[in-house]
Image 1 (cartoon, rainbow, N blue to C red):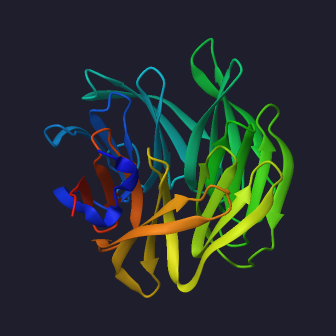
Image 2 (tube, one colour; image 1 turned 135 degrees about the vertical axis):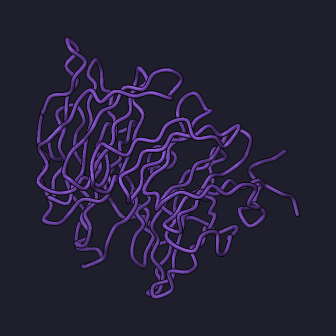
Image 3 (cartoon, rainbow, N blue to C red; image 1 turned 30 degrees about the horizontal axis):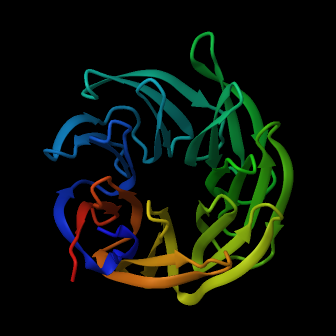
Length: 324
């Protein structure tokens, strides 16, 4: 099957799992288990093969959980509305857990967290509504994370962070003043920032394609930037009525971007784009209407050509490709 030409409009919902409003889902490295975190402060691990819940954790905090990532040695790192980062150890085939560390340094809720590995060091980078990114360095003596550095070059909450491995840069985006900051991963020193392209426009998602191009999506717009020279390449979409809020790079090189109509939160769609050979444009090749009845917050692609989506309509959906 040539999955390069599989259009998102031909994916049909195979299974639906009813959970609370999910903020993030991830597929664990074992390729068998999904982890979800939600607005009602729950972490749920369930097995894809049988759609069976392995573990429900609901006593870490009374606040919304916003992001989750898998670390080495079967650990999870979770961010919360109560300004904390929690690290968990999973064991017994992901059916048991132990809280092993809590990180407290942010002054507001933590939107996102990523792991960065550079040379012989391991870091976490966390972004917050306190307008900062904090770097935490792994202490290899006790396998705990220590505060390392605060990056602060914006005056608004930071929604998204991403690592560009090729150019060894950490990239962050602010919430409402359209500021994108670039930092050197070797030193975490500030390099430069892009700002004032669109004043008062919220950036919701960042994604890197072909190692060199940054996709920036948010309220009303999708932009492409050259990471090497930090210059704007192209304005892909601009629509006063649409919020673009989730960007996912597929295994075949296509890009999925979720969108929701402003004022009509009963219909969340996904559009599919291909990247042109000149690296200057995204070409819309397909769209799938009404995949969820509210914001789509995460997209995952599985090895068997299935796609998982989740949203604020309390549903996780598993989609199969069906040729038309």
